[in-house]
Image (cartoon, rainbow, N blue to C red):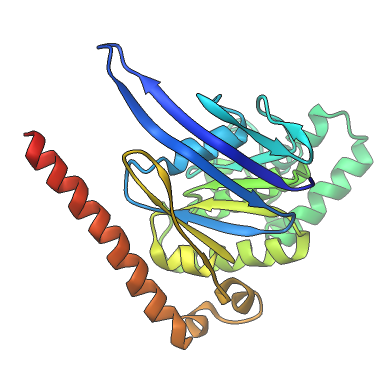
Length: 268
């Protein structure tokens, strides 16, 4: 099967004192090529752990990840990662950062330069290609990180709170850019966020996870990402179903947090 298949993933972390933490339990999910999925839930629900397993950074205790009919056994260029902080190479300029992956793969210089210039156009940074990354704002650095990820032409883009450190205005602009890239590239994207509003805007599919152990609680199919591709996101938020769905999910996550706090008080 083409696409990404998460098959009965469980993850247990064994602690030095002999106890263990069950971070994920029997998580199964299929994504077809071009799906845009946002994932949210209370702290400790295993969102980032799941993303790291899909990336190949962690090996699950049970289950497996399949991508385009083969088992994921470690990191690979077919899965690109965008972190909360850009994780850029400070000693390289913008062009060198974006071209790093193609250069490591031995892409001819002329083709690499064409690819880099195109991607910098796409993310609006062509005029900054010779700048050092430390000279850029946080939003610009995340644009470089997106371009660097796309330069490897991954099948799946994994995003771990990529916009969480940005100010509100820059974050909204970057949300629009993510939607533009999703629609133009046809890439499969999984985005982790703590923001319910962001999950609604950037999730054609939205996954709510529950903690202790981490598991899928509910999935939504939403129209807001498609609407946001060609519209002002502030207008999308006026959709009659937007506020209703936001409040429903907020209440769901609030109830989970209350349950967690109740358990902690009982154990104290």
